[in-house]
Length: 62
Image 1 (tube, rainbow, N blue to C red):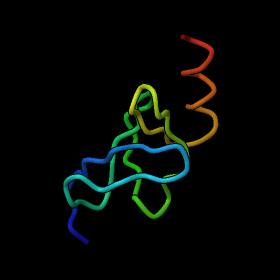
Image 2: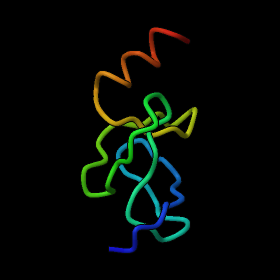
Image 3: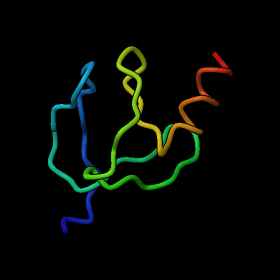
């Protein structure tokens, strides 16, 4: 494990690693998300979310 924050470009059905790392930080909760568990993000805002709950909170607050 790199234990390093990754920099990603979020695409509609995938993401591209811009800077190598093993995790990203949820834009809503601040929780660490291992890349292998990253399933939720917003392409327009380029933000990752820990789960469907955080993604829903973000959508409701826009």
